[in-house]
Amino acid sequence: MKKQILSSLVLSLLCALLLCGLYPALLLVVAKASAGGGNGVTIRYSGKRYYIAVAQRFSEDRYFWSRPSAVDYNASGSGGSNKGPFNKLYLKLVQQRIDSFLIHNPGAIKAQIPSELVTASGSGLDPDISYEAAMIQVKRVAAARNVSEKRIKSMIQDHCSRSLLGPAIINVLLLNIALDRMAYNDNLKK
Image (cartoon, rainbow, N blue to C red; front, side, top):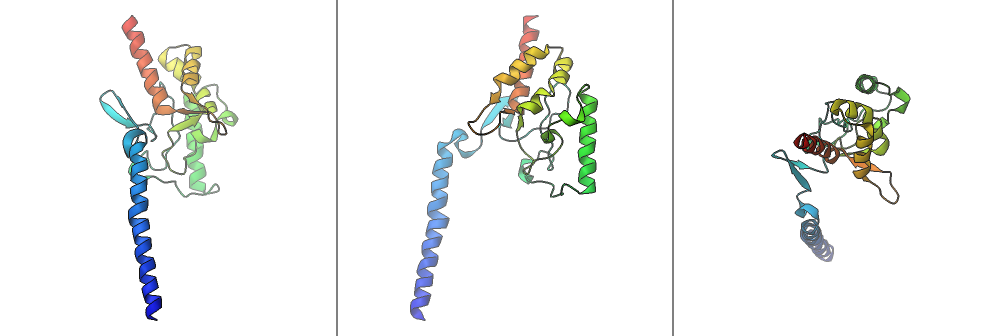
């Protein structure tokens, strides 16, 4: 019995050292070596600091809209709604989002709306939208900013990230900041 207790204590101490000491230290080293030094990648704009990997709320017509958030874009409370696809409250909320999108995007039809624009993600904080989700918003953004659709599409192309296996995505925050900078620069030229 002494032998079993002794081996259990040694194993417990070894696991504590490995899992509570060495593994967290290794993660800290990797985090400090990554972009942002383990604190997240940020950008400063108009006197505020934004985390690039966290979705922001955009609801004005002059901006591209982010994916809806079940946690109201609160990074400290990341999570989904836990409502299933047949939940009546969830379906009502999705329909409200569809109706709102169609009001703000005349000419768009329901079947063309990418699901990500009316359904929240699992984290509630996805900062990216698909290329298709950006393209369906071009008319609204161009009209609200009094800019050609061609120019807005060019900006989408400039902010499009493509991976080898995944779909093309656009960081909504970075695209919207670029739109504001474009408007600022255009005003300086006048």
